Length: 346
Image (cartoon, rainbow, N blue to C red):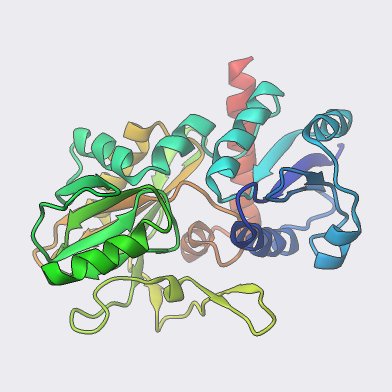
């Protein structure tokens, strides 16, 4: 049986931060899923100048030594490789949209959600509106552009409409703090969401995967927060920068986050809400959603994160492992769903 030819789509057409973030996750995925008897991995690396490279590895040295080529040349190269499917590892807006759409045009299937769904989910305001229409509770909010004046009284949470990893997110407790928080948020996007702060009970994420056409809820992951001194998650909870300037994962252990016992009564409530979100947004293969649980036990939708790098430290990978689905099995499941859905379109 021939090896499955998988192209890892890595880098960023936006900035160096997203390039490093993409390379971090993709390198971990390559190391963890390198079953050479099963897969033939290829690498495509895009830089913020729009150029493509096809390096032998994701080391900085190999990337630097690989000749950059144009989009036209890259398409010719990819077409000649007879790629079976693509694994998108890009987290910037162009990477989640334009580059996925490119492979739709090339008629090469790719793992994960389509470009139009990613575009919708990358805009927190649109995502909230869609899941709210499906019956999922969302905090009251308003969308602001530069110069707009917020009308919701604090406490509120301010978020750039399209940033991830909590960049630019702030909790505003007093109206006098609005100006500084909005100024910071507008550094990351030209639209900002202001939404009512949901008092802390718990904060969790819920992953969904598709297995043989069925939507399956994974165990929840809960994050350690404290109403007094840590009411919301921050950038430092997710990523950190090493002394040499590289990005790395913030430590993941049971001191910062943990898998919730599936018997916990909150699990079915959150999974049901996550299922509605998945279906309302039109997701495929997998999805991931953040929820705030108020002190009365009511889940409130916060945002969607519709990507998985299949690195061991990816949230969906950790959730699957908790129910004895090892990473390579999860990887094969999603590949199977990708190829199955592609065949159904023919």
